[in-house]
Image 1 (cartoon, helix red, strand yellow):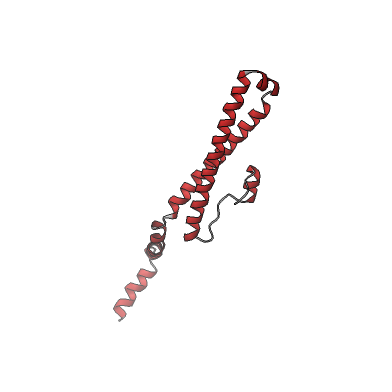
Image 2 (tube, rainbow, N blue to C red):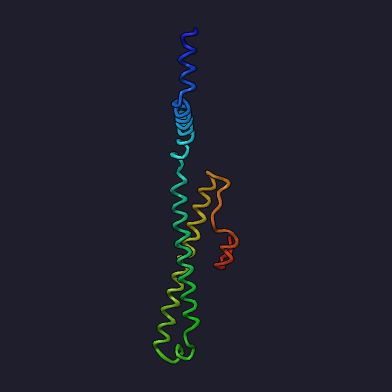
Length: 140
């Protein structure tokens, strides 16, 4: 019995023991927590959600730019010349297309949020009330 205690004592007090203990704890931590993160399919959905939110912000900026261009278009020029009429028609159709894109993006975002919330009930995005009031979007 005494033959085992002396080498064990020298191993415990050696400088390599804390390194091995730390490495063992780290490996056990990885084994315990890694399978959950590797099997987490919400990561792809979260990346797609971030992409759609960024594209929605880009669409909203384009909508603001076209609205200001329409607002700045001279009313007399737009009524009395073909060029102004064409500009107003083109910008109006672009604005309509951007509104359609906005609705599609909002629907995609809501769908992805619902899918993620089924897996993670506490999940929330950056589409909070402050963000929505900034862009003038009313939550549905």
